Image (cartoon, rainbow, N blue to C red):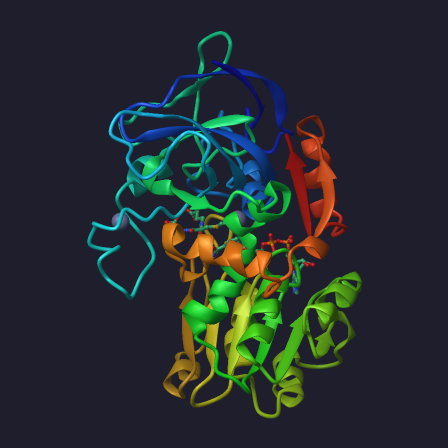
Length: 370
Ligand code: NAD
Ligand code: AHE
Ligand code: ZN
Ligand code: ZN
């Protein structure tokens, strides 16, 4: 079939919206019509050329929601008409990783997914002249139609609005999951969230759900305060307004350091500040942000010797086929909020404006609706 997609032709260039060829689903694959997709900072990270795995031309996008149009041979868990959320972290339920409750990082198709191809090693997308186009994170939701492995689709209820639940495909699940699945925050905890964007605000929302007493937000952009406060932030710190050492300031604000800190910026200097502002003896710091190729984290080992714990999380530790339908229910039942964070709605033709808004710090989530 022919579908419409925003194609990343080369690193650092705007996406180009064009007609592309899409082959039908092979065995174990599913064709979906994408109804809506969010723009996550990770899409921008890859578009910009910062991603060591970034390969071009590719169709980016990994925060989508849509409808099953066709199923390939052997697909048993989905049928035409099902509503689905694509999963960049699949859940095969049989690999060594899926069988280990300590991780959500299913590895069944990780190698081919990282290389931008389907599990059989080929791509389903091509340009009208036949030039192959790579998949991205196994999802490629910046296309009106895409092909996905069955194990990388979460079936969700049909009454949930696509333009909101697409955000559960990354930002919502990552932020809330970092709190609940990865850090396992206890009622009454203190926490610091670095970066109050599309991910950090969901960390704040997760902390409120978990019953944290103090939720300190840290961001360079004062315009994030209003939204973060609405989602549960109790204190705000703009590092530009702090005289002296930021770690010392945050340790004072939290009465000795926070029980939990979260990096949602992708900046390795911020990651160090996050670790060092965790409480001596027991504070845990969770890295969510994705850092550019070549970037490394550092701290004095003494920070860990004296009881701080440094860890990371991908997709909020969620096992997508199991957990994502539940998070959609939380949204539909009013337990979590999504709508206010979707600050901009765009058409596919306007997708580059979404990245502009992200750069200008004006959006939380821009969503493209097909
Ligand atoms: P975003 O652009 O919406 O938000 C980033 C926020 O960080 C902005 O509010 C910005 O003002 C703030 N910020 C930037 N530099 C800062 C600094 N030095 N100090 C304090 N605040 C600073 O991005 P997002 O979509 O929320 O993504 C955040 C990060 O999380 C990105 O690195 C993204 O790639 C990553 N991410 C990781 C996962 C995962 O599974 N681990 C999932 C999604 C996104
Ligand atoms: N390709 C990058 C790493 C990118 C990365 O860390 N991706 C996160 C998801 S970010 C979603 O917005 C992730 O899930 N990683 C686990 C995995 O297996 O990819 C690089 O540095 O090579
Ligand atoms: Zn993402
Ligand atoms: Zn698996």
